[in-house]
Image 1 (tube, rainbow over the protein chains, first blue to last red):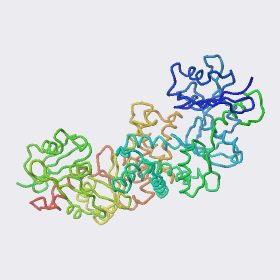
Image 2: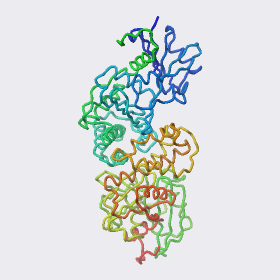
Image 3: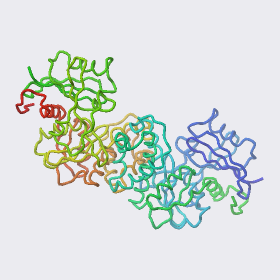
Image 4: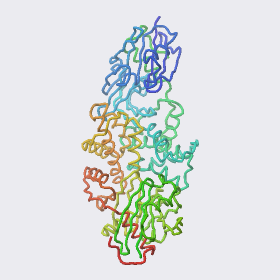
Length: 308
Length: 308
């Protein structure tokens, strides 16, 4: 019997994918067992739990499981990095069941410096699914820590982390911008207004407009319940403004989203206000990337091309 | 008997100044009775407590005491606004002792929109102390919500609020940038490095460099205990970068600090890294502004020029 068990193991969640020998995805499971929320028994218990009933197959994992606070720290791989280089850089940790879990390293951009863990696997998966983007493109991976990554000739050549999701959360929960206590409305107009404020902030940037979320409310020009959407627009819009300002995004190269549908939809709306048309996000990029890197690392006996 | 009792009444603290009829400052008191931390008995108790033993004199107050959540809401005065216009716009609230407290309105910049309460009085006080700055200058008032205010021909003509102090606090206390838990070192080099990162971020701006505080630490290039100073430098440096980018600060017009010595010293260090030499801050601007506006409002019987 051959195939692969692939794990996308982040800070707050754990997802597992079971592939057959041809790369067909047979089952997906998810548990809230991120590395900061492990069940009793730690990594071994989480692994045994999420793979219960599955056959003994080679196992590969990406994400924070390979971080300093993870199961075993995997050193970052420096840029530029392609699928072959990543596949050759796997390490492993021996689980309590006597079998290894192979760990995919994160990437380091010495220029920032900046680092990622998990997104490198999504990027590889996206390139498998959309090989036409391998030549020259920029990927946006929205999230708590959004990543903007540049790909040239199949390799990740640069990236930057924007703390958009985390900043939004701490400002709402702990700053005066969340002080109204109003329930958040779903206000697309306020979102667009925030995006516009970031776009029109010019070289000064949206950080210099942050207080506008409060001032507009005091002015009666923004309903308290719409402040969160305005703030979301301001911070997401700032990603586009900054990326265009320093060449991380270029109007003449494809821009592609990877990630969860609802959040990506916000990015598509924001992009439209910059006159950028973003195609639909690539789903399940992590699963495809895990398969691809396991194949590169020779973990899979059948070497037929992935059909997942 | 004549003279003035002047109150600088903010969110977290209350300061009281007693002037004689000529504007000489005779006594200063401070209590932790900001409008969010009033003693039992509320505003009246705070007023009675901080003025205990003082004669019955006209009373004037500036700051959040005149806000929506204050003693009585004073509408903002729109820009441009000078001392005469502010002095003519005072309102009052009747205290339990049967006498009025005259309230100075805050200012509103319709262009932002943006608002201030309390800083307008400091600006008027600063212009009394440094009349040569009346023609054309920019004032920096660092704090939880820093203000950059432009003065032309004795009037405040524009300003912007930067949430630097609050942002620093919430990021340290609630984000991954404070996650190391290390005691903050006093690391002037890390501060300068943060300022440099903001300065060198160009049109992309420092928000796109926020994660560097984490990445540098993971990279071993920044000690965990130095992250707070780096972050402080990044955020304060961003004030200068943004203000220069959009003309709020100009290299050919005087730039003047108003505020507390230690915080202003950080701003002077940051300015030096932008090749801007900032003079020492103007102290006690609030007290001088309160006297000046009370005089404008005819609250003081003796109209001799201030000698405070």
